[in-house]
Length: 81
Image (cartoon, rainbow, N blue to C red; front, top):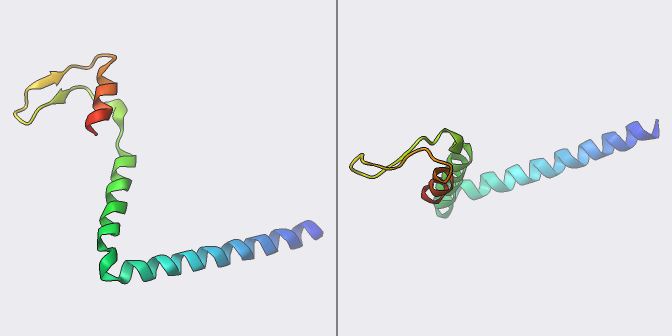
């Protein structure tokens, strides 16, 4: 019985903390000066979702292949991304 009470209190505390954090985030995002932060968050999210294992080759701006898919190409690809 005591476990359930403690669990309920912990859930309530986490819920209150999440609510406060989201309210602060919303207030910051509504301000004009935080517009740059929104774009940084978007850019970071895109970088996290990139799949480096699908890199087959690296090309320059003209479309010429610089590096083929070799064991070292993945390390070099990390430098470009």
